[in-house]
Amino acid sequence: DAKTTQPNSMESNEEEPVHLPCNHSTISGTDYIHWYRQLPSQGPEYVIHGLTSNVNNRMASLAIAEDRKSSTLILHRATLRDAAVYYCILRSPGGGYQKVTFGIGTKLQVIP
Amino acid sequence: DAGVTQSPTHLIKTRGQHVTLRCSPISGHKSVSWYQQVLGQGPQFIFQYYEKEERGRGNFPDRFSARQFPNYSSELNVNALLLGDSALYLCASSIRTSGIGEQFFGPGTRLTVL
Image 1 (tube, each protein chain N blue to C red):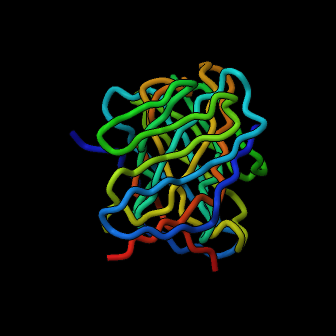
Image 2 (cartoon, rainbow over the protein chains, first blue to last red; image 1 turned 60 degrees about the vertical axis):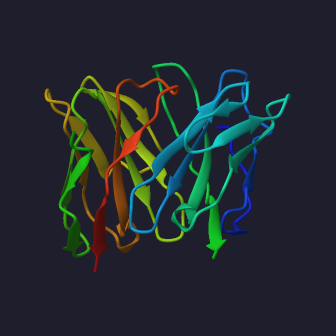
């Protein structure tokens, strides 16, 4: 299974942008890159996903390297509510056998 | 609309016992996945079901089993509980099994094995 590598923790000041990196050097050509976050005492929450092109939604932006071996989740203005564990995972597009692997994730601390 | 619901919220069992955890997906979602999250770790995939058929299985022993009902709700069963089974068990639903769509997670069931 293709795995992802993320820093264990990061800090950001409130109202500043945050760049959360993820390495996935063994990604296959068809794997989608997904990001989820988990606030304390809650289940994970979908943030964004992409395949090759950069993606934007109301929550964040996803920048994908040209060789797809790494990606970066960008929170444009961190708020205290963004303090969470962020997971970068890979998922195949097919409807057949599915095995999803979450790593330890990056714990983001937002400083007021 | 109601999100993914799980029951019970908390559960305490002793070693050797059996446990059944329940999950109701979002209305219209036909795929349900189960995850185990040990404290300090990311969720670990256990099973995925779609249209009542198993579509994926993680590296868990045969003590773990699951099923999906005609209304797409699901049960996770764990036999012969071990102390190491203590964890947060998460259920996630999605419209399809495809890796393109997002999964919606429930709040989880906290299982403590004594």
